[in-house]
Length: 85
Image (cartoon, rainbow, N blue to C red; front, side, top):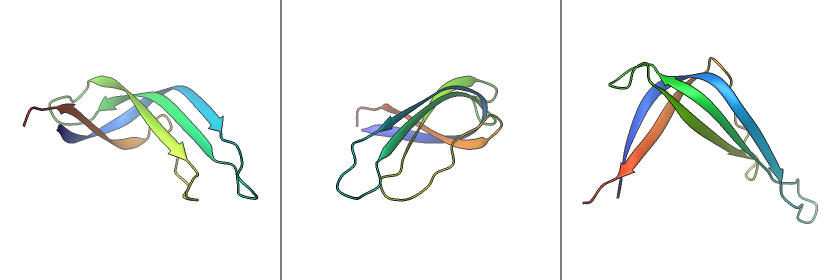
């Protein structure tokens, strides 16, 4: 089991953006996967001021557009660790 926690943070730096286009099926739009690696600083809680590396995954498989994170964006991070319950 994983105990999940949530925290507010601010994106401080974009480290890399990788894009992968998957083969097109029939007449459908090609699926594009994006992986954005960045650094973010916690803005509250016990970790306030600490900086961590984060990853945002985006795809267009279901036709929903997502905003790519940018420096200065306020974000909610989810993180967790395995627990023995």
